Image 1: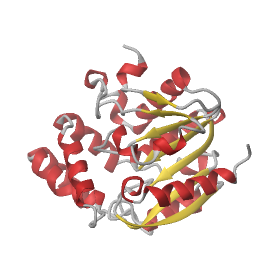
Image 2: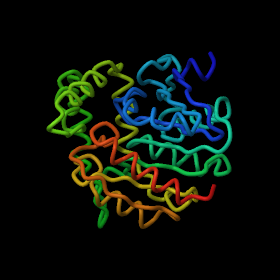
Image 3: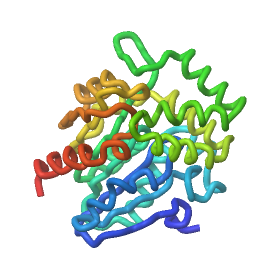
Image 4: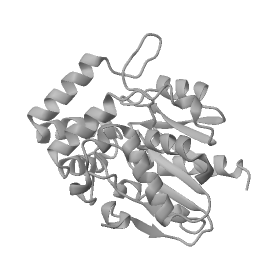
Length: 267
């Protein structure tokens, strides 16, 4: 099966450079519907579903290959080789941002910039580092998820979305969670929330914009600030937003921050 069908790839726009959008855990490429169209007049825009999510080919989900985020980063590089033209501006949400960062380490020559939306290099508190969760928190989250996936989805998705004044967004994210295969989702959640890529951060030399929300229970401001302090050539921007998905609940603010950052990059 082609990479396009495997990842449910959609292409739009005719720009000389390519902007690639990668979603986070429990989501799919439709989560970019408020942001990606704004760039179609300047870029060749590529949206896709991580294998195991959305409209991807679920049979391509390999528990060995995808037991680390590097497996997803390798998938991303294959997609770029197959479909991108010119330099790539990568936009990743949450764990998608980490996947993109790993890809920039493996093939820095392919990337002009990386936009990291609500990123976290490690979700677990460790000494002076505050990722937002204890190990017991993560173990309990995964156990609850395995016991009753639908109930877990209805409980966690609104917390992830936030945006209390836009309840339809929480409903949409809940529906996205519930569409996932429970076994694949549990495995991907374990890989995501137990990952720790802090040692990889200094190895990425691609210019980066770190977009952190002012109030985010999943990726607290401390995680974004740590990332900014340790990621060479990074820029930090705070989005006034309650929740983990500002590209959906505050797309105008996110787009403005991205545009400002991109105008500062070498053409």
